[in-house]
Structure formats: C-alpha cells, structure tokens
Image (tube, rainbow, N blue to C red; front, side, top):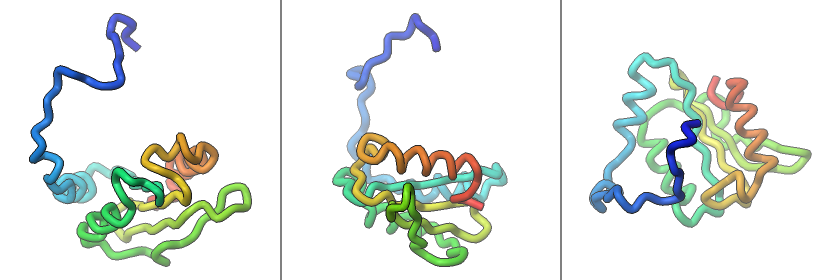
Length: 128
C-alpha cells in the first residue's frame, strides 16, 4: 500500500456521465467469459438489495445466453441455515449466488455467509 496516497470514500474529481449507468455490461461479461482468459466469475446479489435488485441481476445474467449446469437455484446452507440460491452455467466458469437477507453490501449484512461465499469461490465450488 502506497502510504503517500490519501484514500477517500468518494471522489469529487471524477465526473460520470449519467448515460453510462444505462449501458449494458452484458458485452463486457461475454468478452471476459468467451475471450479465452480462463476466468472464474462469480456474481452475487443480496436478495434485499435496493440498489441493484436480484431480479435485475438475474435478467442480464440470463441474457448472456449460457446453458444452466445442473439445477437452477440450488439452495445452499451456511451454519445449518438456508443462506440463498446458486446457479452455474455450462462452459462458462460462471456462477450466480443470492444471499438471503443481505442488502447491497453483502459482507456488512451477512459476514459469515460472505466469508463462506468467498471461500467457496476461491476453491472453485461456485464456478466449476
């Protein structure tokens, strides 16, 4: 970490064009998945997220056009409790996981589930 850099929560010097918020990310994900980069990509969504709702995430992820591997919306548990649902896609190394009861910042709302989610991602369990 460069200690000479002063980190702040928000930048006042970067100005985003509001039109960019309506630009689809589907082509970017397709490029990353199909470009031969061998990436494991996990998209996760708190099911109480009022910023990027799960329904919207599901909409664009299904627009990628990959075939589901196994069962769609397979429930998973953490510490003996149902924690959400997971879906994997064939030939894409792509996984989608919902986190029950979590808002936009999943680790803030569900830290134990977030840690399990991250651990399983690093082990390739969500994407392979």
